[in-house]
Image 1: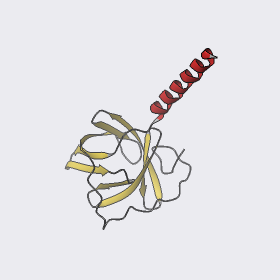
Image 2: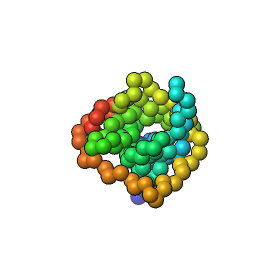
Image 3: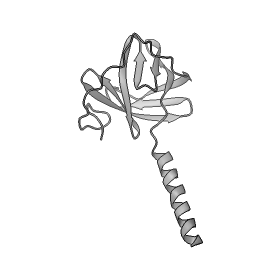
Image 4: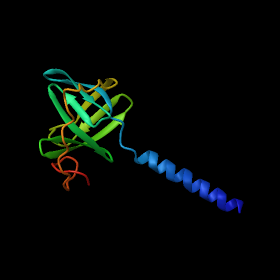
Length: 132
């Protein structure tokens, strides 16, 4: 009976380990990118809103990608987070962009609603579309 319990416990640990590895990257926070036009900040909040400049959009993650809702479509970007650095590629970017986490997200003002989510349609990261 004990070997069976040990196998079940091991399977549980492996399943838990796989779940941890499958987690989407932690992208919530305030991020800064150095661009040719100067520094730009992006705030990604846990309520599924993200702001940059005067724009507020909705976001969601699927595997190693983040999708941003622009109007009635989702644009997918591949995301890699290592420590306080996030590299974003694909979508409408001509080349990968690296941002540095500079702190936690600022709260979304109550006067700015979270935009409605457009319907998800088949697509791949780096193209218009939605969940895979």
